[in-house]
Length: 432
Image (tube, rainbow, N blue to C red; front, side):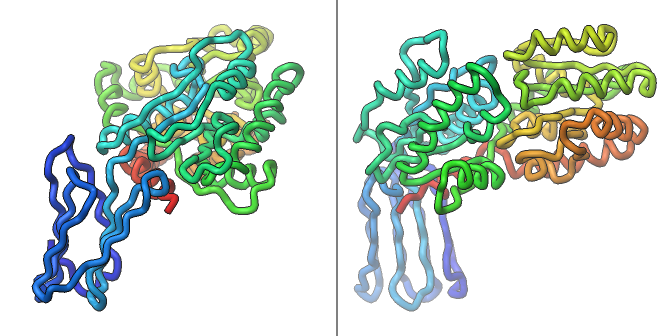
């Protein structure tokens, strides 16, 4: 590789296969100076025509996992090489979509993307299941111990708060800010989530580095947990290759069904405001012939929402699907005309990435991180059935707008593809 003199900094990301000898060459024209970096060995060998030595600094494992190679003074060329990293992921979030929801999806897809780049990821999760989730999380954290067998430990949300202090390679990664979510809860749920939030606060103050998924979450973490410095932002991610394969294998032609279909996918929590969507649907029945609202997901508010649907006489309009397998979820996205997310609190919203990957227009509440994730979406006032109904109706009456928003989303979502975000994660966790 020939590098121009004017190029002051040249990063080279390097993911070797197994133990193969994979050289990376840097050459400045006319000098005969070169550096060869081989995956199989930690040292770096150099040869130079003028007997010059090239300085090399290796940051110790556990503090950044980087090697920095600098060619002799005056060349103006540097290169950074990432060595394979051994990650330890700590999470008490259930490792399935039904119970772990978007938090599980984000952690799982990140781990698979890092492994595809040649790194290793070891999960540490609860060994036993308890009926009270908060008790399970607390017991899990009491069982955690530090380990020198990894380069980087990543504790998600509150997990790892007991072992983070004084560890230079411990990262607190917030998939959501619990103290922000708890304000929408009541009773026992509010009490137990408040206990989790206190541990999450300890975690972010003890960790060497704090990550969040959006600027919104970063601001809320600073405000609610008293952080001095803004956390680093690494967004959520989606495996676009896998998602598009699923969409292509559904066998359902997009947007040719006789009904106008609005899709919601997500957990049935109070902050998701599915009740606002139901009231909007009641207002739209007479204005949109053939309106169908399909709701994917379950959760603690399911019974109350079913009762509200009955009170609003939505039996012929709303279809409750509960939890569905991934292939069926892809089919639901493909058959939908519009995706709707009326939530008033989102730390990110992976379902928005899924809708964009399916090229669906999005109508959503202007709240939380939603404006960051879908700046091209049709955003309406939060907690307003009238505003949500008007947004859905405007998309119903304008197929051109639906197509335009769908195409814009398909372009925008490319930046959240798993390999790209995994590289951002590696950048952000370079603690050195």
